[in-house]
Image (cartoon, rainbow, N blue to C red; front, side):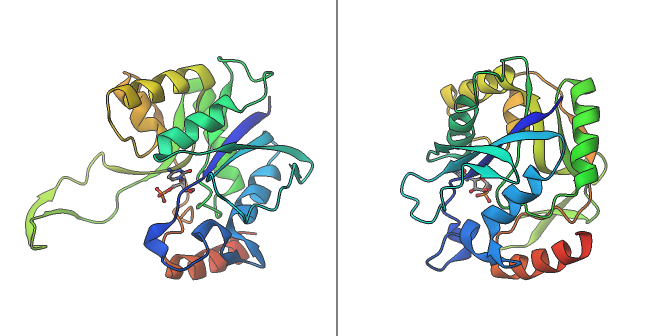
Length: 228
Ligand code: C5P
């Protein structure tokens, strides 16, 4: 079955600098956010999209469909989890609490189609999953002067990407619980882990970068042209 996808795009992109929020900077001739939405909407497993926007967002073009897939909007909050919760609540009623939903960062325009397909296939079977990649670099813990204090084990360490796939009701409960506990979760899996779940890590391509700096935008342009 096809799945709805929640796309948090309500961050202010402060690390980027500049006037235009990073999700609206041009990538391959259209705004980064639109590039990500079009990519998701073109995937046969995606039924529709909920895009979560900042409260004051004059840049959103107001699309109610992308590539023939319905697009809804929701208003995000101060923390990523607030934005994702708003998106999960804005899903159509036809999406039940037991249905799986995807959550994908607006800032990750280069996710590969085959990785979405594997995430859905393996994640549904596992009861929840996320794309990621095993850590390949050596990992250092630094002191306050950027002096290497200790080398962390590299085994069993993964970098977490999106999309992440969870049941709508279970993810809402986990995010609400993290919020009630005052814990700022940096992805959906973190909320699920804290609630006792063990999401499956599905290895995906490292191309799935999160555009954070202007240099990332140039890299994303290159990657998109290459992966098509
Ligand atoms: O800030 P970061 O790069 O981790 O944001 C990841 C994604 O979450 C981005 O697409 C950003 O727009 C979104 N976000 C959000 N609401 C927030 C913070 C981040 O929708 N309060």
